[in-house]
Amino acid sequence: MSETEILSQLSAAVENLDLAGVVPLTRSALDQGMAPAKVLNEGLSAGMREVGKKFNSGDMFMPEVLVACDVYFAGLDVVRPLLAADRTHVLGKIIMGNIHGDVHTVGKQVAMPVFEASGFEVVDLGEDLNDEAFVEGIRKHNPQVVGLGTYMTSTFMHTAKTVEAITKAGLRDKVKIICGGPAVDAEAARRMGADDASDDAWKGVEKIKRLLGIA
Image 1 (cartoon, rainbow, N blue to C red):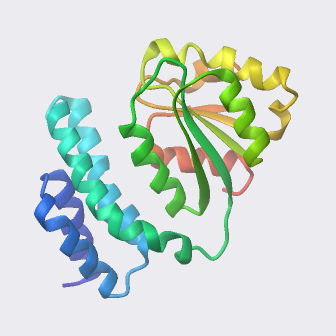
Image 2 (tube, rainbow, N blue to C red; image 1 turned 90 degrees about the vertical axis):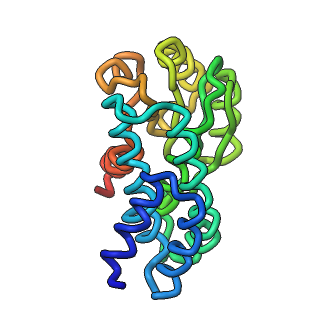
């Protein structure tokens, strides 16, 4: 099969919830010499993008999305160990975590490997984090970007307090802050002191690169 055919089948495996087929397809793609980042971005992640579109349009429901995530992660387990070796240089470091009150994990787990495959080092701080956890994360890891996971409107509205805590700690000018999740809005995020927001990990990569001046 050609690269295009394998990548299309990988995407379809995620979209069609094919847990049995995704691992051999992923290995086949790598055995053919495809770059791990390409397998992730144009195969597995492309399937997750289609799943997201179907969920947003009402053509797929949350139980199916969760199965699709299992399929995605099964393929990711094969690719992920190779991602670091596949990068010729690191574009920057991102720390990510969910704002206080938000315990969702799926969105962040999907976004992290997308960022890694795009050349970023990613540190997962966890979920349901108080503002001080982000402050300490910046001090400890010295990132260029802070990703605030806000998967509910209520937690998204807490962005202003998290940004305020980072500012009071004297760290705001050291980082770019971007919100992520289905409840975010870029204009509202900027009003609350963040630099940007995205409800799509792949578009988020583009925005992060622009914020860092490497687009």
